[in-house]
Length: 201
Image (cartoon, rainbow, N blue to C red; front, side, top):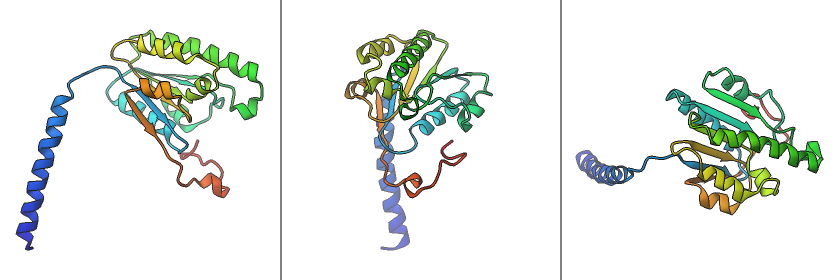
């Protein structure tokens, strides 16, 4: 096959592909707020959500972040996004459960955090809400999943919600518009490498 034939076959293949893509784009004409779930054992769930915050800021959107479980306030993403005028950042946890070791306290903190989130979900000015590590209070039964889904379903029509964390309940995934499951093929931590600034913190 000479170079001309190869280039012509490529052009024809790409033309067909463009027709398929253009048709799919044209048929996607619904515009509404999305519920996205980022789950799985792999690294990058929160980082993906924070990437979408940056994207939303580029469009001038207003964003609220609610971090469950995590209690630290020295991460790079928080240090950066707290400086942005359109971001409200809430740390609603007191540390991972193996650190706190106080079930009653963990449940109470989760309920207090949920009260704040309910206000976010009722505020149409908040165009993107990130509920970081929110799968854990749901998975552990600290919050009633049906109640949470009901509040999410009642949110303003164009409000987007992103939920991160391992072990997302099946009902949450079924209710979501987009579910991404991140796999853990290899992680530096398992080789004894501590969390690194700019990568993990």
